[in-house]
Length: 147
Image (cartoon, rainbow, N blue to C red; front, side, top):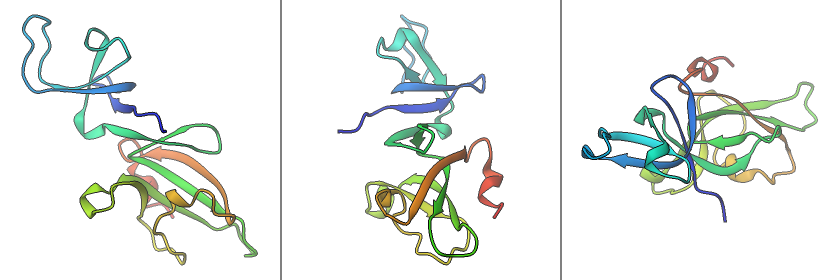
């Protein structure tokens, strides 16, 4: 069973990791405003307000460097083939629940000769040499346009 946790960029620009709480009404007794918060296991007293558009869930997968992969990450997948150059694919990790596909996967942002469907699920594909998080859509969106 995969670990359920989230990350979000705080108001100060730093990333926070942990449990997600969405507060819809002001909690006067604690001085907490409505918004999205990431907290550790201690809960609200140790929660950090984050920008809701940056909140992403952990996929349960790690890249070749042991870095956790989250929704919104940009991943480079390198293939081991007989081609003269080492082919790769760059895509954004998305949760596709609005497409009747409630799972994490990559969505293509570049033209690719290979079938880009279900790359994230194919981590056991023998032609995949490595997965590497190279950035995220919030801080480096230009990575999706680079290849």
